[in-house]
Length: 340
Image (cartoon, rainbow, N blue to C red; front, side, top):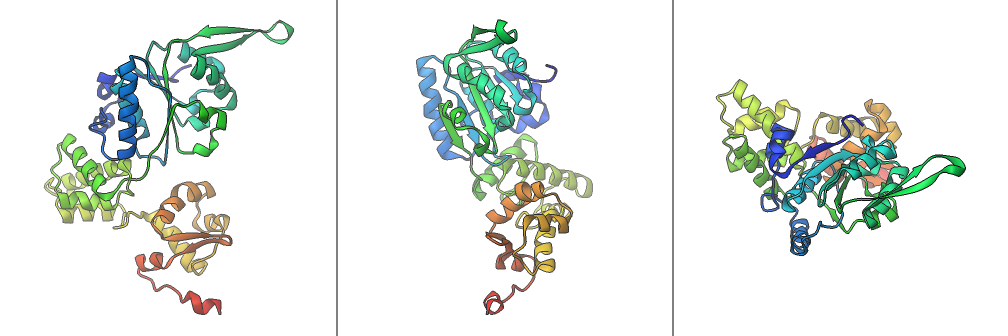
């Protein structure tokens, strides 16, 4: 069971997880954005603290990079609990899960990232653990097999997933609270960037933060990554000051345009427009023409382009919108005349 879990105490996140964790908020008050989730969580956690019992199991879902892992650690810190971390793919055998569950102390938080990637056998073992705080283990095989029930200490399971639909209904129903994390607004992104800049000891003005925020796909993880790369560029090619021209030049060199599209996004749009007349084109055909695999197009590139209104899905395939043409400096076709 090597490297299957990582124990994180609430007051030692930065030491255990290193530099990256230093940008993570430690409390709900520090957490920026997701106002509805924060409001509901505040009530949920305060009620549990008032009863002096562990909070119910929590499921966090939404696109990657929006703060699911951070929020799991925040919940642990708010409850004064130790957080044990593992992931769905790491739990390969029932024994792996049993070893973790039997070592949990009263009130501990077990955080399972990518929980949708657990196999169904592991999932079914969790059912009694979540409901009755008990673990059923089968000992032996064949006619001599018997079931041993182990009592567990009360704990909180926090699951994080980007694919809610892959969780079975019975599993989802065992979570007492389910929260959806959505993309951030531009003002929230600016606040996140300025907070991260302060922690990294980087002087960044409102205008510079807005430039970074506008190219961050409304995702904090992307924003923090871009902030560090802009800092590197200013340090090596400038005097270390993050002026608007320096920020713009650094992001341009990273092939990130003002709408946040990178080179892969633009190549996809250009392939649709130049090779297929703007579409409709099937995903498999588009993947072959761009030398990308279908999963990358469907799970990484397409969601952002759809959200930005640069492509449409139709029954016949993907279609580049007029906005995509304008963004690439091209003239959109007269679709009405092409239909007559």
